[in-house]
Image 1 (cartoon, rainbow, N blue to C red):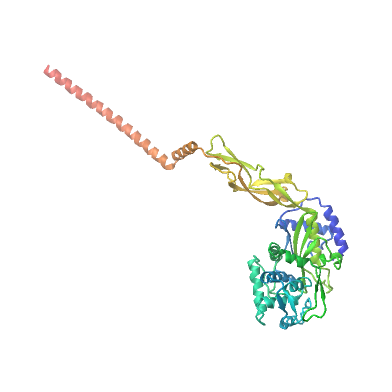
Image 2 (image 1 turned 180 degrees about the vertical axis):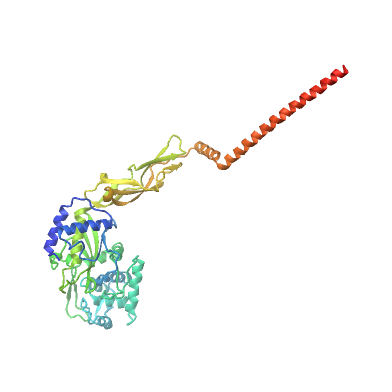
Length: 481
């Protein structure tokens, strides 16, 4: 692995020299980031340190980077995020007193757990347990919370709480998540994905618990006072070096706010963070799982999950901007308009403005709006302004370098009434073009021809008969003359 100083300097230099357009969908961003980071020496080979990662712009909800984000991964102590959610949802009064049962703490014996130092029989508030859970990543706090929310019955409470975890994850839309414990210690059946975890965090950040959650997660030091068991106050320190300006060293990143670290030998380094850059007016969420804990010689490695998060944030802040690329007044396509008096065409425009995350150098003039196959060549009046006529693809670049940014609806730019006269004429024309009408007309023509022929024959015979009668009468006159 590269040294942290080289990593940071090289990546920042590369970010400053970006000249080619970046790609706006997650897979394309991934390729671009990896190329730039590899050139900068920020990653080895063509991969991140992490085996799975996702970067989400929290202002728009757009995923701007995705790497193995749907792969099942052990989350280690990142598991505690959903434990925190369940505590906040089920204990509205954070002053609620909760006593730590000895059995729940004893279950952690021999696990080499990260602990907050919760003592047997100690009574803490729900708020204190929340800090114990999230700041020093206390497995003991996780077990106490699980026991309390699970009903407090030894042998039943913790499994019941795990069921609550899985049910809540499913309710939040997680599709590849399964928990078997509240702390995240290794178990092959304990897994989630970067996308699922991002979904959980995004929910929390949009919930009534967002302020409390971030207040806790951004705290780097927290003191538990003496209580019924604790003889002296204890100060807890964050495990998230990215937000710790005192102990974070080279990992410290001034834009990071929370959220949760995790690591086991099997899971590797895991991390969930947010970062806010006020000068860029941008906020991101990064989930990185599975950075190796040890090298081939068994030596502990630097925290690759933190290095990846830092690189991704630098890349996003220096490269991406939220821009309005298409306005609702932009003329996109004219189509034929039928049955309108003195108007033969209809202008289609975007249903609304289209804005998205794009490379800083991209502007509206760089964008192509291409109508899709669902746009008709013609429509019939009447139409109302705003009627959806089809869709168009927004992109930039050409050929193999064409980058799709999104899809927009195309709508009618105006309301146009129909002409009843034109409609009636068209119906008449349609009727005349009907197969059965044609057959009927053919039959009529045949019948007419037959009628005419019969009439001619009849008239000829009639005239012959008249002449014969005339001759006969004429002979009689001569005879009696």
